[in-house]
Length: 529
Image 1 (cartoon, helix red, strand yellow):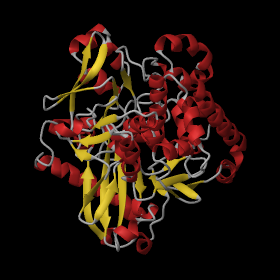
Image 2 (spheres, rainbow, N blue to C red):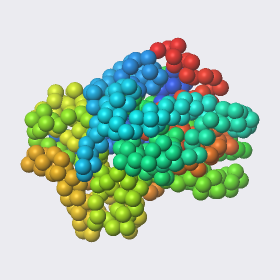
Image 3 (tube, rainbow, N blue to C red):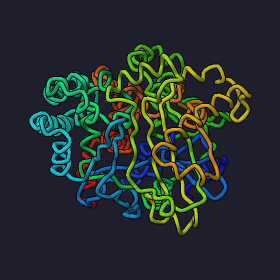
Image 4 (cartoon, helix red, strand yellow):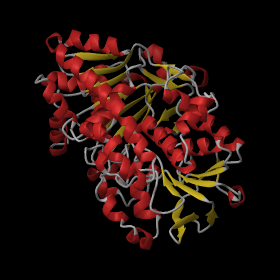
């Protein structure tokens, strides 16, 4: 399992660092510091470790809560694969989704996203033969924008004073792209709204439609899957299970049921943490993977927050989208049900921004997007551990405000109105499943819906957001979103630092450890792998 329930004797140390939160950013920091010989204590408020990489079980079924596919890991020489190999000592294995990794389903046509840049370009041109120039120009811009991010990431790993000097040189090209919305870039290339709708199919992977999202986050997500998508063998619980031994070999430990209430600070220097049970733990370094809104808004003493004017910074960024997820346990195998590995993106029309506006104004209207994922089909180990069964997930957007009136009610005791709301949303998702996979309904053995309140309860995100901060153009202008903080020996990591998702959070861990050790950890990883 790789982690233990908190007890005082298990947290005695001494430890070289304390990490708050066990998402992939926190685990990555702990493992990379372990590689540098440091003993790290990871504290997790939930009863399982892993953040959005954890799994949960019901009866004979198991589901991931945030990992549906990961790019840039199939090829061993790819940088992301090198990082995973480094922090897991090569123990984490990957299973490719196959030639088609995403299917975009619109009312009049289905479009497939295929492995390989040239193959993808060819497929898109087959769909839109009159738009060859726009498609070629678009893919070239995706590559340019992602390459420009290297300078931006390098600047973010620097101390703030150095970053201010370097930013005009390292970030100029990046901000040319980041200051534009995805729609602004695409509208210069084509007037074909169907093509724009197809090219922005994966907006659900970062949570904002084309007219709101920064083009750089769109480009990085699209480029991330050029070589296809993969799924961790054994499911997403494999992240914790393979990273934990690396942390433990250096004397570190992962403890759950260990909620941090405050970061201890004296003379503008972090000294450790105080837990919700009142116990205080000390270490020379504190790294927060709890998100910047939680860290700067809740985990620091009000006097520290006021002295460093942290609240005005936090008000310049906004939480990302919230979601609902229907978890299904099926009493037949994925093969018997004809479930493949490719994800489904189902839309009522090509204008994603308009779809979302209509949905917010009229929740009874068409769902703006429904995402279907089939974890048991993606995991080659599933049948050996869960014979005769399969799982799938149906995900959609749902504003936190719809559920806010039940926010103060305890988990699983929110009353009949809440359950009726969930039942309605469940049936709405089932309508999409019935339309595209009608064979599923008769095989359903377990159905359970999570809402933004579920995410709030388990992940401690105030508005149930799944992607941390919104990836707007403004977000990428916030120079304070970096590993360094105004408090000595306190650092930040996770998806708020650079970008969202598994890749973004893991890259943040590399930048954070580079900042702590004052060395290029990327070079260390490449040398070790």
